[in-house]
Amino acid sequence: MNADITFTTSDRLSISDLEGCLSYCRDSFSQLAALLLSIKEKAPKGSDAGKLAALGRLVAGDMADFADAALTQVQKGGVTQ
Image (cartoon, rainbow, N blue to C red; front, side):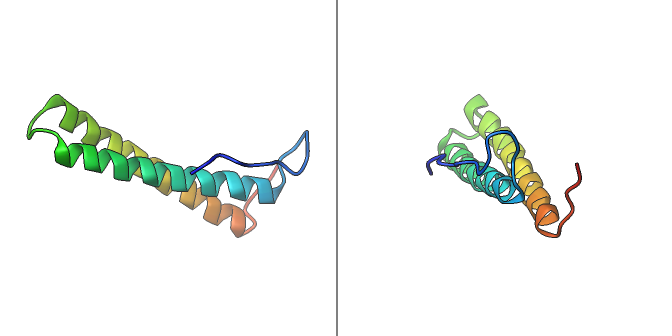
């Protein structure tokens, strides 16, 4: 994935820009969670590396869920200034 986001205005984010940012965050955190799961599965059982990868996977998954929930709220029109 490549962070190639171009904002439509120079001083404020549009709703479309915000949707793109949240979508990109959700997808990136999901990929990070998948990567950390792979590391956890390949790490020796009970190792610090495996434990850290498992913890990181949980955090990345939570962030993906948060970005997805925020994106859903934006798409429903739930944005105020």
